[in-house]
Length: 160
Image (cartoon, helix red, strand yellow):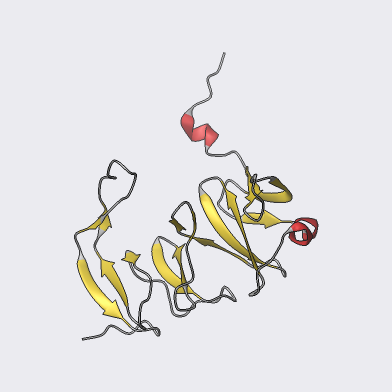
């Protein structure tokens, strides 16, 4: 007799759920593979309702994604129980363990290289290196603690 352990569960593919419906229906033809990649069939892309920027959102596992009609997709951070908002035209995403900023075409504004980053406001974002999530509070909000904090412009240049 063998027992299924938690690491084995990590190998399971996760279906995508539509965020453009009130009931979070499964999006047939879309899944998040065990390696973290999103696999989306053309038939799945055709089912989605896209916003004025040509974007739709899905959730697979614990990850939120923006998708474009051509199949391009980006795993973005979760914010307010959904995909990160575009602030001043940029959303935040994890790339190889670093935060990066992406436009509505899902193209990087500059290389991802920060341990955390906050949204842009008035052309400036606060970022940090060596920081880490703290303990969640009673409402499930997690503060970012420690590290060195910087302010950057929209090209990723550190400001004085």
